Length: 237
Image (tube, rainbow, N blue to C red; front, side, top):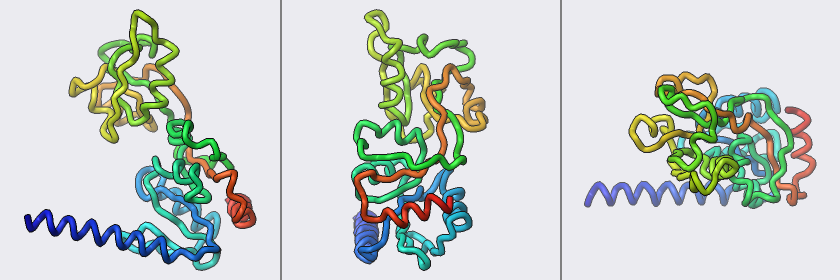
């Protein structure tokens, strides 16, 4: 009971801190969504500080940072959420991957890709056990596919489905997708491949590429409040 109470108190403090951070954002500032961790975080930080010239300090355990030399507030978010926040207009601009945009596309009609950033390059691919010898993704149609990209995977496999295969059984997991085949949860997976080291260590191989992806700068096309600062960021990049 004590442990649960302490956890609840910590969660309440975290929520209160987040609400306080957002309330402190100057109303004239543009909000820029940035990945809070993962493969894009370090490169985004370097781009914004050294390339764009933004001066800011991100305190530990705080997901908001105000630039001291530009009317911009950075909001650190999970990369998978940034496209949604920008598409809904809650955040003005953001940096995320083309793969994330593809996964959230049905809900983001107001999202616009401003420019490709040239880093975070990898591919989203269908992968299968190397011992099974799959030569085409069509061989996995109707089977069990585990992925963090269920909408992209379902759309991709639909082209191979028939009355004989039935619908492909797509299951979502948020991480460690490469373990799914070895644990008997999947016949194949759809996941990102950068160097291929993790894939090969799991006994998998690429069956078919779905798309190439990289980091991109995005904005909400309906937001016209911060056009000048948005254009300045684009030019400096």
